[in-house]
Length: 143
Length: 143
Length: 143
Image (cartoon, rainbow over all chains, first blue to last red; front, side, top):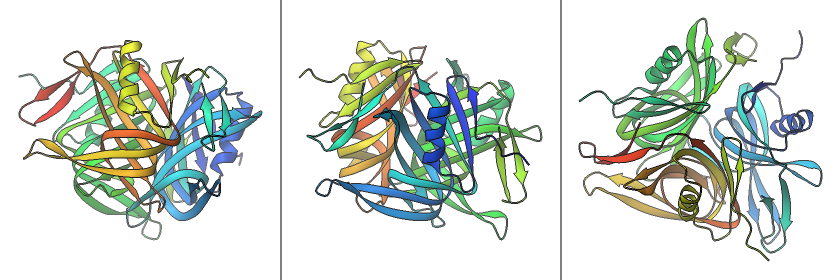
């Protein structure tokens, strides 16, 4: 059987349906390159086998990561842009497992679980870049 | 007094305002049928008297449900599609009550509470169907 | 150095990037006035130094507020409208700190933290007003 399509074009952007085992960042980066997306806002939800959140430690200048498994992502919100010629995806999400208690944060990784992950991608018409700002120690989307 | 309108047309879709006692699924299904919506992405927030989340048990092939009452829905994200000629709504949400602790998951039911529930519906131009996939035991949106 | 632009026009609306120290409500109200926005749906995410949620007490007819500091907002959803000639913003959000445990509710205030806050604003074409409804004791968006 042919591999199912992961996205279709809709008015204003794209609709994505990722499937079990899919890596969210890999597929969003592929979409950005394949469709030459200058910038976009995304939102999504679905079931994940693993989701990695990170909380930024400004001392270490890196994220303290934590993984959660077998969770429903209750909402993902992000912006697709570019940095040094490469896709630069910034997204946050919340998720909950069997006990319905919600966790969340800055998204470092996401692998789709048994089920699917649905995303709406709204494309913007200007190429946007992220720049590292030394004074705050973070990448900021430059308008 | 005439019953207040629950939705208006806006560029790209609809804006809905549901009111105390309204059942979210009933009103979204009515919108889909009345306006002949082929597929749509929705997002919303508001106050609920009852929200039912479910976590899927793949052994039983059914959701373990849990109800929460008198909560602010902090974010609802979903996709409207069809299955066997009927509306097939898939949505996730997070919510929090008086203690601000968030819960969330797959949405099984939602009744608007004292206040209102605001939703933005972005319509897509292709009719999308959900299909049951035996190997993963879940309905998946086919693109 | 010139003050960075906080928003640009994109198809269907605006993209905002707020910066450390920015007050979300001040900037959204300014956007509404400057760009003469009749109504809009917004969503966003980012890092906050302070976020204030409120849970409505119908006896007192006011919100019981609680502040949280140094949090990632995992998702903000809102609607921009007007009331008595002034911007009337209604938004809910969820957020999580270092322990990734999510909190959330009705948004009373938000100050951007070290980093930024990205928002997508989808503009609607009709001016919408909120009206206080005595029987439910709350402002409701009139369609």
